[in-house]
Structures are given as C-alpha cells and as structure tokens.
Image (cartoon, rainbow, N blue to C red; front, side, top):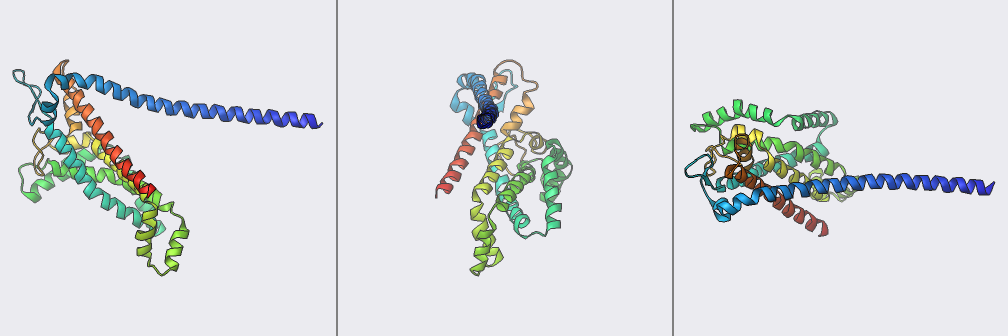
Length: 302
C-alpha cells in the first residue's frame, strides 16, 4: 500500500516536472526568437546600409546639408537636416509631454475620485488606440491651419506642428505606465509619511514618486521610442520638406524621409541611401535607449 502511494506521488512529481520543463522550454524559445529577430534586423540594416555610406562617404552623408536624391545629374545625399529635425522634434515632444503626462499620472493615481479616474483612464486608453493616420489627419485639418492663423506664417505645416502631434501621441504611454508604477507603491510608505506630519501633496511627490521612479523612467523611455519612430502622422503635419530645422518651417524627419521615398526609389544609390538612413535611425534609437537605461540602472543602484 505504501509502495503504491509512493509510486503514485513519484509519478505525479515527474509529470509536474515534465510540464514545467516543457513550458520553460517554450518560453526560452520565444525569448531566443525575439533576440533572433532583433539580430536579423540589425544584420540586414547593416548589410543594406553600408554600401551607400561607403560610396557617398560617412562625413558627407551624416553632415551634408543637401538632399537631392532624384537629381539625375548631381544627386546629393546629406542627411544632417533629417538628423537635427528628429532630435529637435523628439526633444520638443519630451519637454512638453513628460511634465503633462507625469502630473496627470500623479493626479489619476493619488488624487482623482474613482469616477473621474475611470473616465480619464478610459479616455487615455482610447487615445492610445487611435491610428497614427487619424492623428495626422486631425493635425492637418485643425492644427496646421491654427498655427498659420495664430502665428501669421505662410504655412502651418512645420516642426512646431510635428512637436505638438508627437506630444499628444506619447501621452498615453507615459500616463498609463506611470499610473501603474505609482499604484504599485506600498500604501505603508504614504501612511508613514502622513503619520510624521507631511501633507498629502508632500507625501505624493517626496515619497510615492521617488519610490516609483524606475517605472516613471520606463514610461519616458516608451515615450521617446514612440516619438522617434513615428512616421505617418509626422509626415502629414510637418510639410516633409528637406530644410534645416526651424520651428515654423516645413521639415522632414528621418522616418518620413524613408517612408516618403521608399515607394518610388529604384534600385541603385537612392534606395541604398534610404536603407542607410534607416540604419542611422536604428542606431540613434539604440543609443537613446542605452543612455536612458544606464541612468535608470544607476538610480536603482543608488
């Protein structure tokens, strides 16, 4: 009898271990598949982007101010305007979007009544699900004419319009992730602060926010990634002109440069140069993520 019970228990243990090992193997394969996709994209971009850089010249390609890829007699492939526009546009969206998203997250997590929190959270989730082309269309019909009338400029399709659209587009990511991080702060932290005589506002900003800073930093990383990688909406409101960046002038981002010309670029140097832009954009995003993750880890260690 004891042997039968022991044998059954051993069988069940082996069966449970088998399923655990199987699920562990599946998760491992999924992780390796993800890493493999990233490596495949990296290798493909390097192979496709380096030929144009070697033909044009690295310095001339990165720091050239003229882009005339369709000029048959004297094509020019300088992407400095695209790089600076992407940097200025992303920085502007972050400067405007992070404070708004941060304070909105603190309000929703710590101060808002349940009904108001539910309504605003639903609106933020809806904002996150709106397609990029809809943002671009609304920007073209409302934002661009508004900038033209308010600032008395010839054309409202400009860097400013792109920054404002990107600001709205990154808000859902920043707000949702920050709210999740703030909600995860143990209530004992806040109770102890209040018991020591701190006001609710002091508790929120001096206790809850520092405790959730890693999650808030992750929200900023997601916002930066969304801003850098956006193409459709930006193309529709920025004018898509190859000018050096100016707040009220039509500009072109690195993403829109690839998206706007890839459809008609023939086999040759123009197409290779577009892959080179994609390679620079890929490295640019990796650099930003590496820097932000470095500071996040540094703050955790401290």
